[in-house]
Image (cartoon, rainbow, N blue to C red; front, side, top):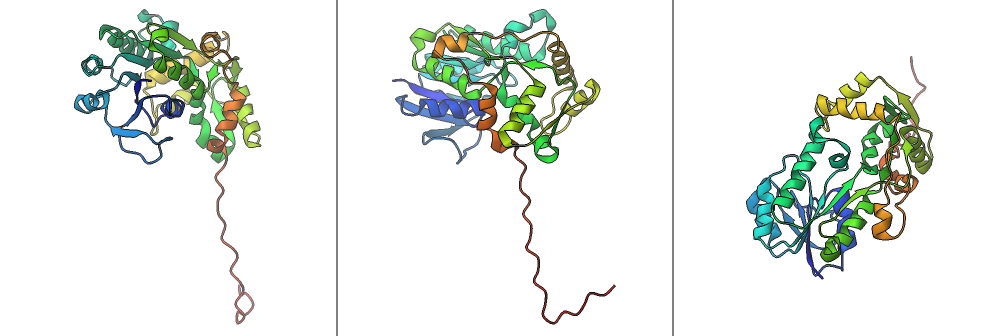
Length: 304
């Protein structure tokens, strides 16, 4: 058994991975930016931030296998600290964009993940690299509109995706963390079991919550403007690239891989299962109503 550190423990994949490692690691440590009382299991909690190398030095201390994700600004020093602290194996959550988008395209998302992979390799780790294509959790971005208006507004409802359940990604990550000898130096391109249009995904969510949801088509420009504002805003450039990719996948089917099946021995879960697992996020919030006030015995008839 190995001592394992899960970074991003409050994220969807980190939470799922922590559950899968419980009782299977000699010591399990969970890292989050702030101490949280809602982590999924009883394990050692530490606080830290990738940009705070002193905090990461403490987090890496005594750990043999580490799950890392790609931060907004990859820093080679983070991996150097891990190596100095004796970390033996890294499982990196990267992105399928690394292999789908050529370097000359200068795609900022692909380049960020490509840079993190390079830092891991240069630090001397024989790492396992996980490259999920479309995470099903991306659909949680629709939750507010579904709860409020029972609709999803997108520019291309027929755009195809190959969404994978976050727990399926965590399943592969757990295997890799617990068996570095078998998984070191390998990369996995992870997809769901079938291509689905956005329209079909919306219908699956509607079925899961027992409600009809409209998939409303909007203009590409309206979609870009919507993605580039609000608390989860992305840059206009990234939003425009995403919308362009959505248009592209109305004409081209995204690839499916057998990597999950090869590692786990069973196919990944269908999107309908993910929708059921996350139905609570999409159900309208009930608005409490106050009971009618009883009539006062001495109240006279209403007056105009």
